[in-house]
Length: 495
Image 1 (tube, rainbow, N blue to C red):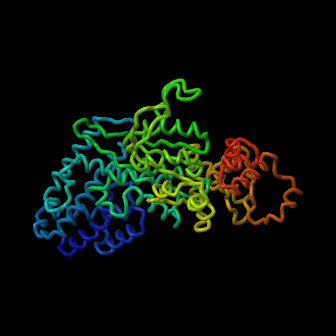
Image 2: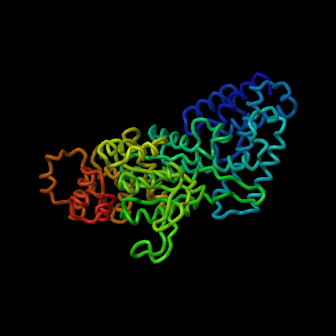
Image 3: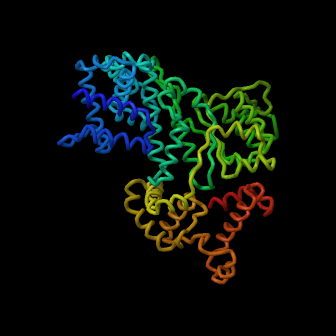
């Protein structure tokens, strides 16, 4: 490879190696590399999991590595070039090991033999690239176990976001970019070098309308945390698949919330027949506790959660010694927490401890307004979850056709993705779906709806419960106003 092209490629890969993989900038860098370097005359496939364009980039990376290792590295002895060569080596080694990383991620339990084999590949890859990384500032190359941990996290995070946040409209792409930043920050290289432990414990607040996928986002963040590898034992410090611990706070009474979160001692209250550890005790250092519906939490619990956010300290009900939580907390709500702070429903100090890292999910109506065809991707995803990939191929087009035939124009999808999932179930079982709200109809037309008598009593209960919930912003307050059980209201609202 001539020196001009090699210099250009080193600059391009240095930018590409640590850029957000879901950002438009990545596409631009790849395109620039291919335009400048050209395409091979014959198709060159390094890995079928990658696009043709990206495989072409990897072809040039491999050619550049060969040139540098054959002696051209001696011509690049400046500090800038040293960093660029180290980035190229990192980028090349990671993509060389993608299949092995995928096998590790897909395995249900830790396989010490497989871990050690992959670790040896990493050590061999580092040794091979030693001439390229000697001048770099990063100490990562002296810590193969840390590089293994970084690679494992990178691949887990990419697959979580790629597979679980479905669709490629502008709002969804922006959401992936934001979630990736919540895990790795905007400076991924610094994160991997020295920020991974501290940033991994930052609280994250997820906002967005009911049913818009807040738990999916929380799970993606939680399952993407950095987990160190111990080369002596051949094990990672935690199994990421078991590290995500969700709690729906709105479904619990105040006493049950406290017990579920912090634990209790036997005899500490009526019904406490044995010790209970609580989720903050069992989640572990690399676990993630997801507090759904944080806007429903009474002030007494906010005070205890604030203590954990400040110092990690908590105490079980009836306990006489403090415990400490070192993991991550993710909270979510559909409510306007700023408004809650102003009206006294949420402590100001509690809010500010939560809001340092915020992600906002997107309502289905807004996604479809940006790209109506995203309904196809969403239905296919739901059908895949329910019936597997073969079932999705068979059923998703039928579901989409039925939706298009029964939905009013510009339907608002008040229940968002949760409503869409129930629509899929209804169509599969009964070949029907009755939208609960016609977004083209004004409230003044309610008499016309009554006159038709086409909405069942059960459906009207749902409409009424959802309206109460919209008006109050709280399952607890809606239940109080309707003189009903809070769990019943939530069940009707969620559908």
